[in-house]
Image 1 (cartoon, rainbow, N blue to C red):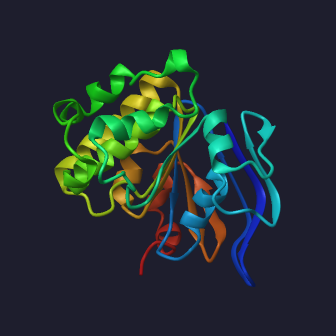
Image 2: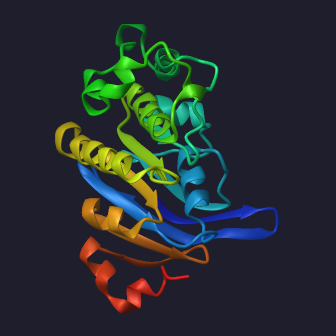
Length: 231
């Protein structure tokens, strides 16, 4: 579904990504791991179109995205759950979910039932403002909002950050449900090693803007691999 080929990305004169290549396949969970500041979020920003790349290509379903803006990529099937959630604090839960209608045809502008099946708390809080929800509830709302767009690729940037353990388990179950029941390609950026080990079909590890490991999640137990994740 997603192919990133030999991508370089710069912020001014500083190079953030160096020849990065990854794939995310349908009905699989692909996890990108690494310490802070190694380029994980830069890679996600490149995929969703928030930051232009200097060279290389990014393709969705075989179509090269070029310089497509984020809204154009959303229309083509990329759903994004950003780091920090970024829900609209003054809009209600229902209104936040409805912002996902924008890339859809009028006939498709409904909230998919599986959003409330995975996150039943959202259905009980439709009239509550997004800013009044807890951090974990906001994360569930951000994932639900992305799913409303009917994505082919779901990109999640550190969904466990600042979330209590019980909600982390709920989010893990939801991601596994999406893989098994929707056929989505899921690209997950994380620092939480155990979360990725339990969920991922394929793992990439980044260090200093490069991919230094790619393989199955079982490879995370290799001491040579783990050294790229320790502080």
